[in-house]
Image (cartoon, helix red, strand yellow):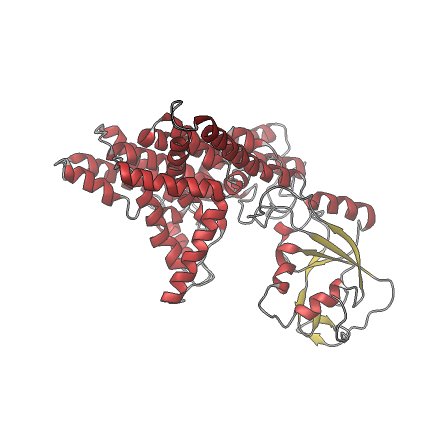
Length: 533
């Protein structure tokens, strides 16, 4: 089921000539370029650690070798078409291979969530916990992308399962070694995984202290495994200079939106509320209620090892969410994953035995909740398949196939355009519409991923400008709008199917006034009081 949800719509936005529709996704050639630089002794650093880059390069390598044998790779260049004979086809297949790795790792993460719950609460809870994890629209979405969120979560969930086994008395040294290795690979895939493990040794050492085995060799074996695997997977042992450059970029002032903002009681309450809302929204209300019930039941029953997933979620919240003061749905995925076993317990308890009072009604309710959860996850697949940008692309190809395009959003929020199509970045400010160069764009593409920010509850001085532009003022008329069909469930991920508005330049003259640092400015007409937006 997890693999099916993660594969439907896997070709979303492919082939893409210049990037990917998923924000922060790895570019099709990124892993190969990184590996080439590394193997040739050149410096590397970047936003993410290197392990997943190397893994994707291994997955893409056979296809690249096949292209080379067919003579479809010439002199490599840094710009499109990158030395590829058929760039669109090759880039699309490279991106698809990387996405398939994410889909497989998303399926594995669901399996690990189920194994963790089964270890703690039994097989039925394990199956239900896996469904809770795999049916979140956020996990479904990121399993379709080249982002590193699902890959690091896969390794983290493997480590969680092993940690639960240790807490429940598994004394095999291989379990400790694998635990250290899985934690190392999670952090070497995405640095923020450190937060999953920052406090996790505490319940494990406490359990060993209870058994009188606190200082034997097995925890040291886990630590040694972590150090060795992380040293190799992160390349800190191979290229410490590159690793330090990555660390400086990660901890610099551009790393997070609230870098340097001090923590205060008000900010703590605010980020806690946002984290709670994001986690509940990502789980879905019925599964969130089952999670609360499962936490209470685990505490009442004093299930040995049940503290481990709870501490992982708490550790992530305390050592990552609170310090960065910033929450988006993908940032709470580790908390969702750690809480999934408790949701499985809550649903399994509601299912009960055949002799339980009102057993049929309770089981029917569980089936209804599970079916609704799966449908909610499948709604993400529907959104991917019906992305509004597909229809916008068809309209542009038929009605505006040439000319200068202006936009105020990143390329990942736009319809796919030909790599040779000129695109300029416009600015919508209180004093007018700014664009670089002497020529106004022939077509302006607006995306709800950006323009919706102008109409939030907080007043913005440029709101009137955007409203005037949407009303057809300046030199532009509203040519077409594209939205996806209404789909069951909340959006959660704004990357998917944004509302696209296309504004076409009128043939009449435009009044352009002034120049700001080589930017031309078109000023809005005065809006009469009470005039509609």
